[in-house]
Each structure stands twice: as structure tokens, then as C-alpha cells.
Length: 371
Image 1 (cartoon, rainbow, N blue to C red):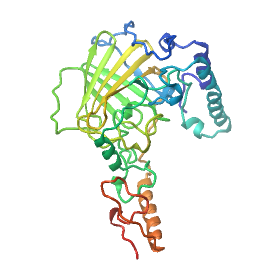
Image 2 (image 1 turned 45 degrees about the vertical axis):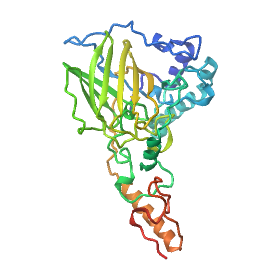
Image 3 (image 1 turned 60 degrees about the horizontal axis):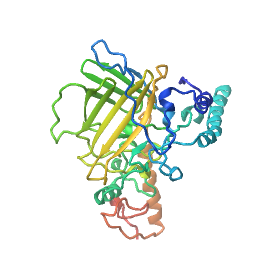
Image 4 (image 1 turned 30 degrees about the vertical axis):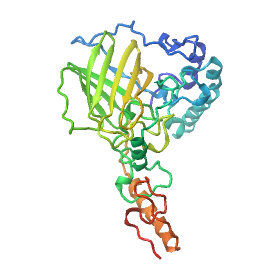
């Protein structure tokens, strides 16, 4: 069974009582203001002299924090005390489900969906200040319509390329893999002279050199791209990533507050700058700026706090064990369409540039219309 450093109720109680670490209480009187990241803390050093970020930093406690800010919060980066207190009932219900499964000897969503206390923040996005993603460019809108995923309602399935990289247990994409899901949210940092390694509980490990490293040639790409790090000041790791392989959505649909369908596009010009600020012995403020001028009208920046929990256990993300879902999607969808054609259903073909075809399009992938 996975261990938790704080129960949902106790975490929420601490939050409401103002008993969380100082970094988490840094809420200004003006709730529309986002203070600068603290630079006061002096981290311990590794034996070779780098700031010591080693440890386990699960992000379950921010799984409820949306990427985009809900409209009701307007320009506020922060919730009021009253809004936070109103979340207590949901937190208690989740905790009761967890405890009930323990008592009954069953494991269901109470263990599977690993929420902790609600966040005081209203969104991960801090720039733009309205907490909203910028608009896609015209090219971005076109390319999003061309992408395929099991999350697209009404899409047909005829082969493996009708599924996204996460459907196929390959990768959640980047920077999506650095953001919370509903489970398997473990992040573990290892360090060695000249390297920082970030191990993700769900699909992936990043090896980041923190020394002079040649830039990859433009033709060489990867799903996590080429990340090159450097130490800045006394408490901050800065990581710049280029050479990203287009294909996966840069924001994953299962992270709260992300647009639907898992079909946000990426170009070869996409880059990220990450800043890992250690602001206390058990807190890293993680900032991510994403830029892709081909697909987005402007860059955007996310910020969130990671909390150390070295008792957190990684569990295998066994996505491929007995995986028959891809095959089942394809065979079931083909059978459904064949049944429609047998009943004489006629559907006009669509413009090939209009995006994913509707569910019963006979022009899709060579499935013939039976007149």
C-alpha cells in the first residue's frame, strides 16, 4: 500500500489553520499579486559542491490545481479563506473513501485517485496574469485538428497511429510529464558530478547534464528533447530544453485545467526553460516557461510548489501488462461501422484537411461503403 506523509483531513486542517511551511503561506493581501520566488534559503551541498536537491518530490498535493484559472477567480492568483474552507467537505469525503477501503479490505478509487488537500492557488499559470493559455496560431489550430487520440469524441480507429503516445504507453509528452495526473505522481531527483537525473513514476527518466554540453544538431530530436542545466545563484537549477520531437501534446488532458482531446500541437521550434528553486529544506518552487511561436501566439509560464516526501513509494506504471485496449478499440470501431454500412447508412466524405473524420465516415482508412 502506498504511504502518505499527511492524510487528506490533517493536510487540509493544517492548511486552513495556517500551519503549513512558511513558503506555502506567502499569500499577499492583494490576491491578484504573485510574489517573486524567495531566494533566501541556502540548500545543503553535495560532496562535489552542487546544491543538494536529491530526494523524492511527489506532486499529489497539487493534483487539484488546474493549469488554467477558472473564470470565477478573475485575475486572482489566490483563493480567499472562505473559498478554501468550502473545499473541506470534498477533502473529507476523499479521506473517508480511502479509510473505508482499508476497513473493507478492498482497493478502489479511494486508493487509486491520490488527492491531498486543496491548493490556495487558483491556477498553475502565472503568466499571462489572467491565468489563461494564449491562443493557438492559425497553424496551431490546423495542426490540432489533424492530431489523433482516444480522447477525441467521435473519432474512428483503424490503426495504431489513430492513438496518441500516451494511449500507446510510450510517453505523456513534454512538458506534460512534469505536471500532475491522478496517480503515479512520484518525482525522484538523483545527482552525480555534472548530472541531475529526474525519474518520473509515470513513463520516463530525464538525464540532464549541468556542464558544458554541445547542442544537438537540429535533425536530432527526442520526446524529452535535449535538456541542459546550469546552477544559478545558490539555490536554483535552470534547465533549458530544445530539440523536442513533435507528436505528443505538450499539456496532458488528464491534468486539471487543460483543453480537451489531448491534441495540442507542437513544432520543432518549441522550447522550455525550467527553474527549480529550493526555497526551504522540503520545498522546491518549480517554474516552467513554454514557448512555441509556430503553434502559440505567446509563451506561457506555470509555477507550483513541490513538497519533499522521502517516505513516498514508487509503484510500477504497468501500462503494457496485458494491454489489449488498442486492438479492442480498432476491432470494435470497425465492427460498428461495418454494421452501419450494412444497414445502408450513407455518409459524405469530409475535407481531408478538416481534421479527424466523424465516427461513421466511410472514407476513413479504406473502409468501404456497402451500397
